[in-house]
Image 1 (tube, rainbow, N blue to C red):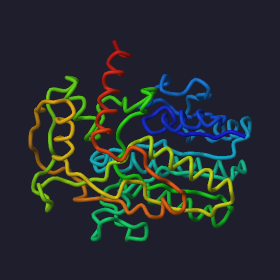
Image 2: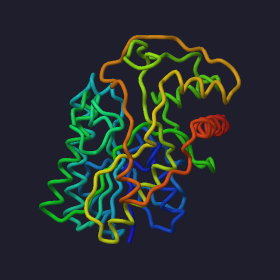
Image 3: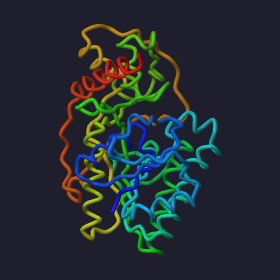
Image 4: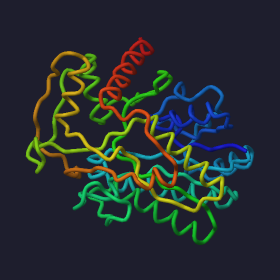
Length: 328
């Protein structure tokens, strides 16, 4: 039996592959390497360079490896980009996810873990957000992920596919062993950008919007260390393998930081000020998003190990130095 990881050469996917390998699982990765890197995939995993929309190849891979679970990360993730290119996002995130789900059903794969997002909520009225809050996405990115959740719900009802959709909040940090980390060129994640400024890879950074109705005028997000996130995925897989029913759960820390508070943490860790410039709001950005994670804790038995902003920043900064040495 093997686990198929789509997008397993990317940021979160590569951490998942390392976790699975560490746990003794057989792993096969399908990734077209549009934003991922072959070197980020753990050596004991098999990498198939392909698009998940190639159903003949995907189904052949599932059968050859006797796949019993899919963990699906492949997709596009930039909110403003989705506003500018909605059809591209619906193709990459929704249409191709439909193909992967159908392939799993055809091959009799019983378990499916989906990388969803807090963007399905839009700007919620109540914080922290519970899973049953209204789903009012404010960007095609959020809508594309919500559509995939709906497809999984319906496929589960029709075909018995057990699934877990984990709604991520803001993923950050790097593998504490420095085997992989956020390596995407031109990444837009706040902590990644701030760490690139701190290490001289970017000359400055911009804050998008300082007039939000928050204490300091900048957006608030719930930041979760990538290692804690992939641990939640592994627990979700174990729960389904033990007969657990389908589940949707938030993944965060149940407290948030503003953009300026995150920048202050990076400055605190590096011991100097960054070149920070103030700009206007970006389309599609919600005001404040913080997770209620009671379901994740109670259903998965999940407990975070890295819920500390300075630790997250330190790991992200260490990865920037590791990446610099690798790319020399």
